Length: 283
Image 1 (tube, rainbow, N blue to C red):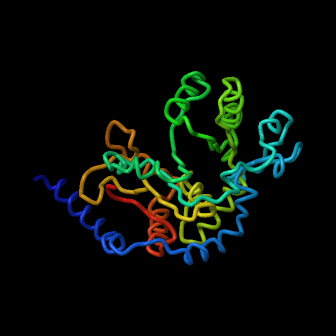
Image 2: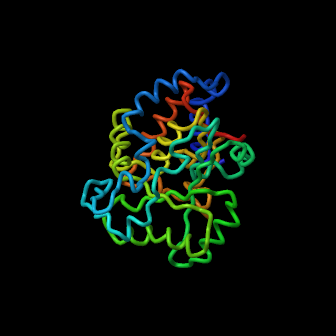
């Protein structure tokens, strides 16, 4: 056994000790969730999580999530916005799964458990403009029951805005039942400030934390999978940053705009209080 193997196994044991006691006695705590929702209420998620014709009227101005610049709501952009918030934003679900992209999902056997919940939020890297047909076929074959695709074109200024908002037209051209919705950059910024007060210090929230913010507001029981800020799992085995990676990668963990250890630390505290269930091992 090499020294590297010994270090990895030792780290795995240390990580496992963080969860072992909590896992054995854990259960959802409705009161803790209700108390946390009172704090989340300042975000007005039901009305403001996505952009609509209601909160982004024609000729108004959208401020980017970084607060660096604005974008006018032109006729072209306005026609792409829904009249009102999507159902998932204003509804209430008995249980939900938010599925991150950590390599700890590989071989976890959690697929059936994830798919058994009422509302599932996944993260995928998709190709749209480069190959429209491939994009549509991907959605149809992999997610036949998918209702929405959540996009965030207004994180920061640039050509990305037009490319991402064009997804609406791509879906319509192919008569797809999938509806594209755009994150509200105001809500993204306010969420960042909210989590800063919770001990999460980073210049930009990850998309995962933005969607966990939504899920905490609409899900009575939230199960979180694939969130893991290490390249070693609880059994001391190497894992990839992303479950789709062909090899080991650390780049994703070192993104300057994000602080994944801080995010995970806060999720762990919410797990300990029964606000959400944090799945970090096999199912």
